[in-house]
Image (tube, rainbow, N blue to C red; front, side, top):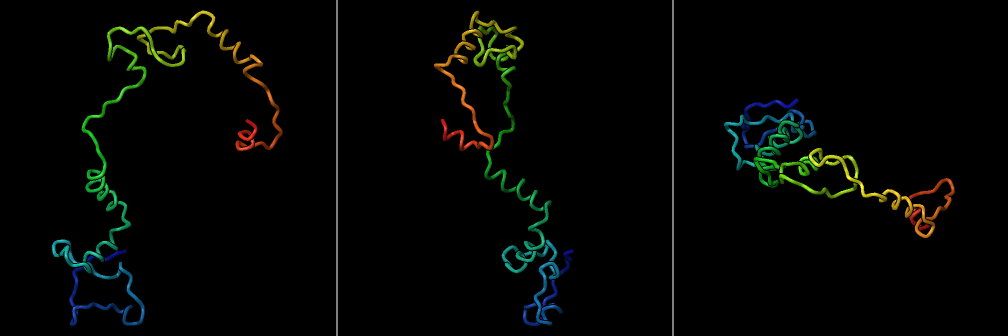
Length: 153
């Protein structure tokens, strides 16, 4: 765990830990960080040490994204307008409606009532889908892939 402690300047302005004296580099977590009220943003060494401590903390990342990145780079509105097809087909926009675009089914907006199917349309659809001039059947060996099917078309 990182230790946040006031920096203690050494004689030459550089600090060395016991680990550095033994020929090893100190881990960034072991180096003291000045208190935030003494931090100088222009001091690259201080800011670098603080960055190393905070850069992978989820709370710090979340704060940075929410406070800096998202407001700057994403457009957002205070009010979100949204409506489902059910709502748009209802009385929300128009007091009277005579039709609804889409595949005929009984999943129409409730305000439109039941779907009025055109007489004979189901029969015409089945006739086209079973017409040998339009549709054919072809057996495929086991082990087929999407690519192999597309090659056959």
